[in-house]
Length: 340
Image (cartoon, rainbow, N blue to C red; front, side, top):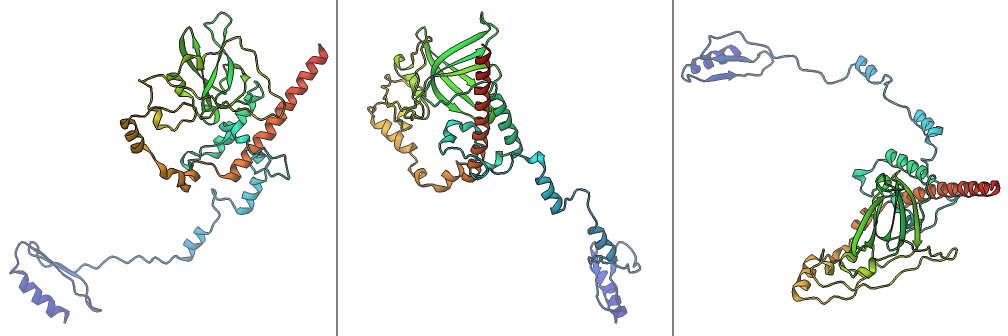
């Protein structure tokens, strides 16, 4: 049967020149044969052996053998209990003193980036240790945007090799060792702003002359305000607050200078400036750039904040370590007083 079909196909091949015809006849007693007009009839070629995808006993034994880069779950638990992992576990209120609820506003630079794409827990842990080690060297007090501060840094070009600047804090930001704050003051009738890296080794001391808050998170609008709101004496004496007293809030509203401004301040919904006289063009710009739906976007608020449990564990760790550093600093001062 197979031979007769092959002879019929060979006769029909002559009527189709310049084409390659593949004759495949599948039967138990037949194999695949290939015919071409450019070459004489050749012997049929057998197909290659089909791979058996079922694993043999040797392959199964090879797959189940112990791997060098694989840790058993008991070994993983052993490493987690190692002394090298001390400080990485979450600290509960039962094992240690918990941080106050508003402690994240006192030291916001210790909170990690809420964006998971830029998270690295090992790097964050090392940065917190370096930051606490730096705080053991110099005293970084509590301050907020609106506080009047004095910062002394090393300056090789000044006569005393140090430079002291006094100003109002108009911004505070950054995370980890990149934390910074900006001070503004008026020197010789010219507004001067200096940005300091909080954990820079060149910073000798940070002193808060007047601790207070403002109604806005940033005070860059003081650039377009009268200079009297940014003028502070370099000989200003510190203003002390009673112990355990709440931080006062300065509700002063600043009147901006006439235009031109550095930014379109009417679009920022600022609370620390006097009401502005809006023109129809300004009102149209406010409506075009307004985003009222953000007040109801729960996912946006969730992505902009760190997990509450993680935030609590980090702040508790920082609070306990900072309390220990302050205790050691007080004891060292008491020892120096006794020696005198």
